[in-house]
Every structure is written in C-alpha cells, then in structure tokens.
Length: 91
Image (tube, rainbow, N blue to C red; front, side, top):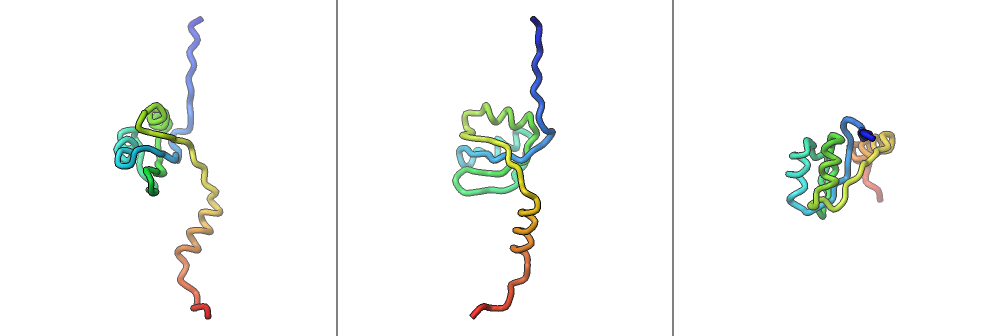
C-alpha cells in the first residue's frame, strides 16, 4: 500500500496544560513552548508549536492538554475593566 499520513496543525497555538505541579513548566519549555499564564493546581496556559502539543499529549506526566481559543472582544473588555482607574466610592 505505501500510504503516508501526515497530520498538520497550526504553527503555534494556546493550550491548557494540566499535570504534575512543578514539572509542567520544564516539559513545556522542552517542547518549544512558553508559559502564558499560571493557575493553581498544576495548570498552565502555554503557547506551543503543534509538534510540542503532540509530544506533550503523549507524555505520562501530562494529565490533560487541549487547545484554547479566546474571544478577543471579551478579553479586551475584561482587560479594560481591570486596568481602568477606580470610580468614586459607593455609599
């Protein structure tokens, strides 16, 4: 038969990575990624190349990994609300 199957994904994407706390950062870095945000309980949001995502998906120290998509308009509104100067005190 000689068929060759190739799976391609986006060049880089955001992924929620869940695994053993303390190991995730090193694993993400070794997969060519960077940490975008840290959460409690061994969870991080990481920017990874597709190949890095696939390699971490097979890693037994990673409990779960999956792509994340952001609603940029909602994120912009949230960021604006968090950085706005405080309003007058409410009585």
